[in-house]
Image (cartoon, rainbow, N blue to C red):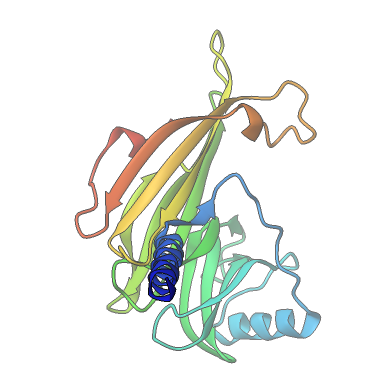
Length: 251
């Protein structure tokens, strides 16, 4: 009897461990385009230090210099770094009387030392885990388009640092899209990314689409999760990313 109970307990322990292992290996959400994190809180000394780095590069700094994003990770090397996305209005030519608002600049620091700078990198970014077997964090970069002819969307791509610069790992197409065309139901679509560390070369992208809400608390955010239905389910092989697919194109 004691031996029988011991066997049962052993089976139970194995079952619990198997369930725990399965749960640990389950894909986890690494990005949700329906969420819009607020700009980070940046102290005056931190902002001043970033401005000084711009001035040291001979760049003009506008009064509305703003940090759009700040994230930690390992981006250019296997060491802790800070990634800033900075909105700045500047010109490379002193004789140019006009200043153009560009996409945010990417600035990566190791401690207080800059290790990477790229003007006009993206409008929005997010830090992703190390994908595709790399030890470096991937970055989700977004460029916004519109609104034009009732469309407002972004073009998103996953990038990773290779050979001195960020290169595209895979294009994701519009992870955020609002469509309002005459005679058709106005819709909003948002995409999520799911990743399993046990399968580093695979990434699942799900899209959910909802009718645009009639009385939104925020008119600029018409997506209604409660009414959304799945409209896309794609498994991406990062070793052979697609070069062109319908879901990669603008809405």
